[in-house]
Structures are given as C-alpha cells and as structure tokens.
Amino acid sequence: MKDQINLWLEITYACNYSCSFCYNDFDKQNKGKISPSSIKKILAKVSNYYDIQSITLAGGEPLIHTEILNITEECSKYCHNISLVTNGFFIEKNLIDKLELLGVNHIQVSFYGAREEQYDLISKVSGSLEQVIENLISIQSNQLSISAVFVTNNNNFSDIVDLLDILFLLEINTIILNEERKNYNIIKDTSKNTILENKRILIGNVKALERKLTKFNQTLYISSVIPPILQKEIGERESIKFLQEQNLVPRIVVDTRGRIRRCLQSSNVYGNGLLSSDEYNISELEKSMKESDLQCACEFEKELLDMK
Amino acid sequence: MEKQNAKAILDKSKRESLVKEKIKRENKGKIVNETKLRSVYNCG
Figure 1 (cartoon, helix red, strand yellow):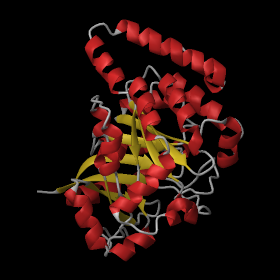
Figure 2 (cartoon, one colour):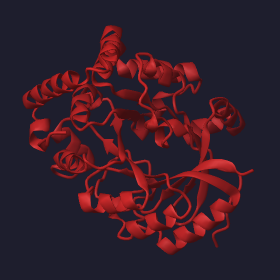
Figure 3 (cartoon, rainbow over the protein chains, first blue to last red):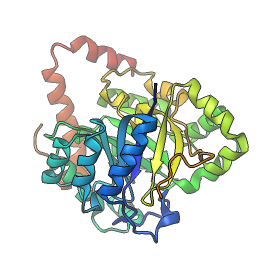
Figure 4 (spheres, each protein chain N blue to C red):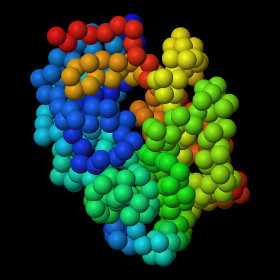
C-alpha cells in the first residue's frame, strides 16, 4: 500500500511581488518555470511511489505561468483535489472558472496586512491590496473554497483585527497565520512549548481575538515553522517522530528544475482536510496552537526521483 | 451575497458599517440555527 502524500509543485519562480521575506528568495534570479510535459513526467513517477491525496500549485506566483491550464489538466488526471497558492493579484474570474472546471477546489491567498500603504511597501506593487480584494469579490459566487494566509511581522501584526473584518466581508473563514521567514531567528529553542510561548507574545490579547473569531465564525490557525537550520539541530528523526504522532501527511515538493525534497506538515491546514469542516468552537484557536502545523523543511537524505 | 466594493472594504469606517450590516443580515436569516448562534456568542 502506497503512502499518502500532498504533492506541492513550485511551477514557476516568477512573481510580480518582491517581498523581502519570500521563502523562495534564494532563487529570486531564477525566473524558470516548469513545462506541462515535465509535470506529466513528474506526476507519473511520483504516483508510482505514492498515493497523491492532493496537489498544490505554488510558486513564485503560479497564475503568472502561461500554461497554468495545461498544467492543471495534467494534474487532474492524477488527483481531483487541487489547490492553488497565490498572492491573488492575477485572480480573474474567467481563468478561475476554467481552473475550477479542471479540478481546482481550493485557493489559498496570501495577505500582508490591512493597510494599503503598508501592503504596497511589502509587495512593491502599487494598489496591490485593492486589486486582490476586487479580484476576490469577482469570484465570490464560485464554488471553490478560499483561505487566507496572513504573513506577519512586527510592523503589520496589529492589522490582524482589521484583516479579520476584511476577510469576513469576503466570506473567508479560514485564516492561517505565518511569520516572515526572517523572524525565524526569534525561535532559538525549538521545543514545542517555546514555540507556542513565542506565538502567545505575538497574538497579544488572545481572548479579544477569540471573541472576534467567534462572532465572525472564523478559524485562525497559528502556523509554526521549524526552519531547516534549527531542524538540523533537533534532528530529522526527532522531527519526523513528533509530526507523525500528530497524524501529519508528508509533503513532496518539486521545484521548477524537477528537484525533489520532502517536508512533513499538517494536511489539515495547507491541504483540504479541515477546509471541508464547518465545525467551530471557542477552543479551536487553542487547539490549533497545541496541534500547530509544524512544518519541517526536512531535506530528504536521497533524491526520491531521478529526473535526468 | 451582496456585491461588495473594494474601496468601501478598505475604508475603515465604511468597512465597520458593512460588517455590522452583514452580521445583522446573516443573524436574521439563521432562525434554524438560533441555538447554535446563541451558544457561540455566550462562549465569547
């Protein structure tokens, strides 16, 4: 019996934004993209090893890829649970309609705050927040589910309250809170308790936030990330053990060059597991903090696939 | 879902009105879920 995985495809590194904290900034100069024919080969090989539970199309900005429809069509031959991770700037109703027909059932949109000036400073694109909101309004009648990732730093964290209002009006009920990559160095001690304590400081008035979430019927997931360098300190085996205890589903990441790496992450936030759930209770925030989606960027010891 | 306007959503005072209207509108329609709504508010 094959292991279940989420397949995360970084289909292009091109992006219209220039966020300083982008997790792919190490490859900023590489505007490469993967072709539908390469995707076809990757899917065939990965499916030999694994049971593909879901496919996530990411980047860079995946909607920049001119062959996004062909790529999605290839993916739909292997999986009908396809997600898109986007900054939302290029969401356009006709395109989303076509993607939905091809099997895309979830879109995860990144947000960088609730104030336009602050937002533009991060994205380096003028009017980016208004554009994203307009685009999301245009697809409100679509059937696919939409979640928001709020990428936080010390300057924009106070926007969380206003952002919840905006997302409420956009009927987005699932919000994932991520930290900027450069903030990783705050977490020197990777023990679970220390990570949670760090989040509590960021969250501030947890009770007030919980009241708002309850009122809006929204769920906020606190995302904790163990950066690769720290992950090495606690050891891959320990990380895997910890994550497996929480029933996490491994993620296989394929970049635009066909290189493979494995991550262990919670399937219930980035995948579609929890997104299908409409259950809500007041302890959800606390629960998600305890079972936070620790994402280990565990480099696999050996290449799983030989793409050459 | 009533058509929203991006500029109104970005304007803090207009947004607050929109939020109040939406809460009022949606609560009014949820007669069947009244118990659930009440219990959710009580939890806060």
